Length: 77
Image (tube, rainbow, N blue to C red):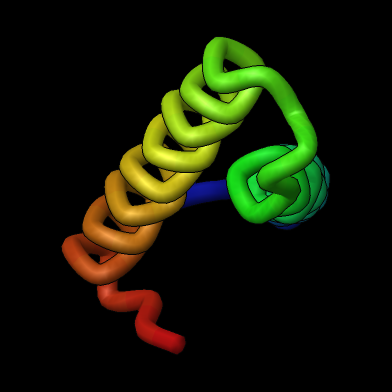
């Protein structure tokens, strides 16, 4: 059994972890949006577009992994 203080500490830690996860997801989304611009822009050199495609795929894979972990925890969008 937890004391009220221990319960509050766990709640605060959970909130902090949730906020950190939100910032990470937001940054991944921003990175993915920037990568998509590079993928679509045909005026860019091929190697730049290829790097943008790689970044885009990495972001998508990471977001899919985060969604899978959250689903296992019972968190669904």
